[in-house]
Length: 408
Image (cartoon, rainbow, N blue to C red; front, side, top):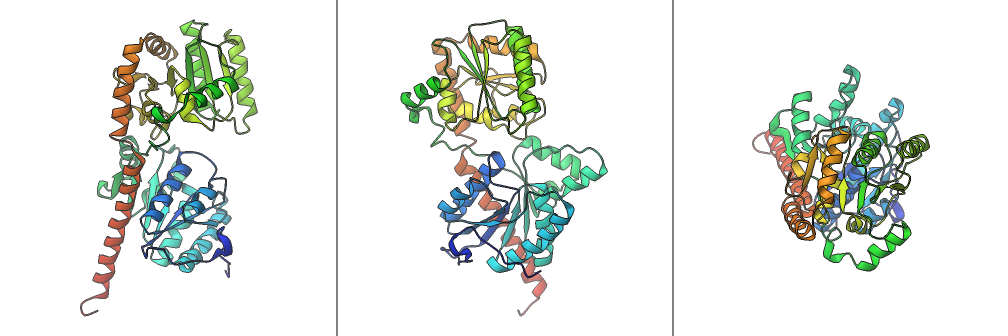
């Protein structure tokens, strides 16, 4: 193929690892925004700090800078394409990348790049690891096969017990190859004590929030399955006009869905209650502004980062009783679960959350913070993932020694 492997690091050189540790290549479509991308950056940082070499291959994006600041290397490849011909070409590109950088493990985080990485790994004898970030829709036989690459890793990481059960049931994965590692929260950023009053006031001013109105917030990009419509219907049932509901997230070009939401708000007479704001760059301050945080996803989420982050900030949470949320939230102690898609029970949970007095809110905040800090830290996620890499490398070494035979 004679492909020149290009790095976004200065000079594109495949330098030796600073600490002499193994080289790990993570592959994903792009480095724009989202839980998959954030987890990739977190692991790259942890690898570099541990003296390993951290490589990330993707089509690029704003988070490339964070990879480079951590001492990692980003390799620009068209891994965001689902075109079968591009996926096939990426096999060769990744094979050359493995050789150029001396890759010891490849870690796939999304299906299209996983197929390229899987076949490149087989060609090169490089151990293949995957992370199942969501319970992909199984659909027909073609879709099931497309998804199945994520269950082909020497180790398959699931981001929740819910996802782990799904993978074992749907893809006949041997549980011995499964490792459940929940996503990790950065407690340095998501810490109520570190959010200044100035940050909160600035955000409230930017969003022109009415003084004294209880704030209900639903963070999440504007897409149908995130449940913005469901929350609007619940607010209509709630019947209060003294609250402010914030839909925080970009529509990412979904102008038709945004117009649909605005039309529903008008139809339910909630123009003075519901407002949509764009993506927020200071989510800790946004959580501090909120009296109750809502996750209303109509499809099960693999983990539920909003549920974890909001609790880390000591906020009451209302979430659907499916996906990863029931693992993260303590019903009646740190928030409320409601039957998925049910506007009336969501409204009832909101009503209860809004009646908490100061003492009850403080007690809930303490329970929520303690609960999340004990289970969902970023350091724990990173250490557990590096332990999986070490396990896979040791297994590969054992297999190599056995195949070489005695006396070698």
